Length: 97
Image 1 (cartoon, rainbow, N blue to C red):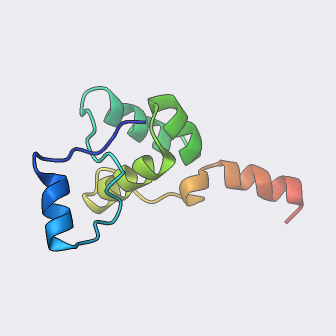
Image 2: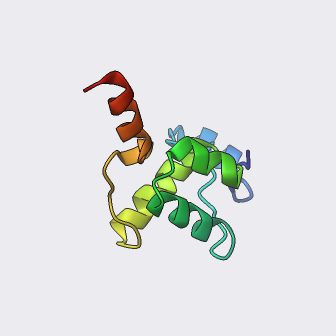
Image 3: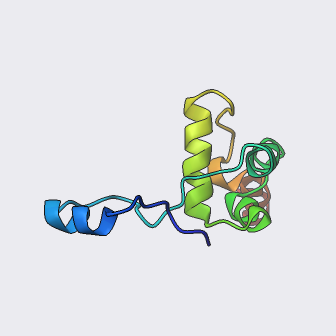
């Protein structure tokens, strides 16, 4: 898993200001040419988020954050099943509900 970008002096500044940074261990940097097209295609094809993460070699939380960003910016649309994708239908059918 890739690590998040931290500018020079980050550790010292953080301890001096006594701040808590949510998700600082998450890598928010994505390649627009190689990673984002794969994530978007798999999302549109109904792949569950953990399969998308495995395919692009990222943490599922990182993929979730990217998808939230892309939906907010209207590059992607919410889908039935959310993070489960079309897997939720298969699980419901197996459960008989």
